[in-house]
Image 1 (cartoon, one colour):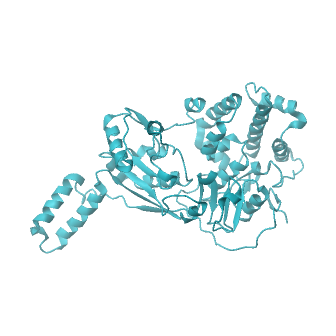
Image 2 (tube, one colour):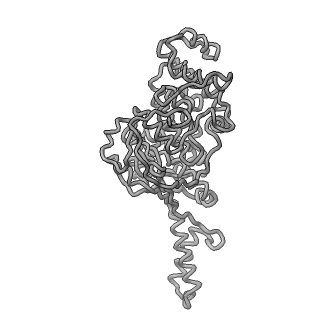
Image 3 (tube, one colour):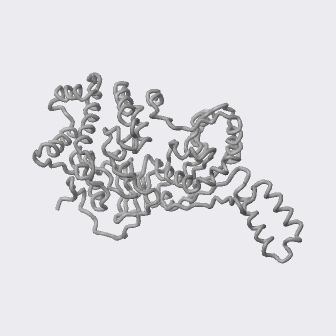
Length: 451
């Protein structure tokens, strides 16, 4: 992974912790949450306060996420909101933590100036021991306070002040007055500078989890479903009628179309479809050449074109399907018949705008694994796992490409590929209806179901 780290593609934008004061605060929070401390003199933390160096020291990458179900966090600075989130177990965790920090930024800025803030992403499940338990997760509540309990003390002081003002003999209650003075020394004047960090609850109807090999759960759509990376039968009994795995491409395509979750790239508004298709074709060529042991040269488009000539009839079907679509886009060639049975089908789609867009793009990434740029942007856990299996040739090409073409304008690249970012707190609640079950393995065309 050295190539990725050197180019800022892995562990990039982590927050450095090196001052003795911050290390002491972190250790107090770590002791409070886990009963452990670190002996390191400097380390880096992610959005949740997790440190890969401390994970190595403790030999526990989940030291802040026991059982992978209720993620704990340590905030030393509000700048953590721009850091990545490592070791993701649920696709919603990053959005929830980012929203929590942004909505309470002023309070957190004041609190972290004096102490570390520690908290937890709580749900009603304490251990995910069976796939069916995933369906018990419907809400996530974020609760946090400083290690010194400033928020709890401020609430207690506010209650005492209210008693002092409203009770007839409150001003003569020496115990009450002494308690107020003691708490005020710790919290400051809460009447002028209120301290409040209320618990926030987030709905979690649709999400991806890394548990059980990787599972996508869609409940808040017209036709609910669960999609497993492993064989669908490995999930056992789950409370959803439609259960699929990634091998059931026709069923997944039909389900996506019936729920109107995707759109063809060539129809997306404001999209340079030709450029996107060309780049996907380049990635497919690189993968094919690497599998055959062909030299990539500098892997520029002229070199890749020579590889395409060399492969000839051995060109992958994914490449040929996208090439047909590109001819239609650029030169008005014949409309290509790319159905859901065609290997190129899922390369032609992207998630439709809405709160489920990124989750749908994660699913599409698993179904179009040679598009390494989309995989890196949308599904980093899958990208890092796949990267470890590639040859040095492909690793070098991908790392250089991402550093050259993506890192220089990440937001622009995301917008060009997937459209504007959806509102982070958008709530998607379409009408729920039970529809007729589809025919077995229906074939779906690139513009929808075959009528």
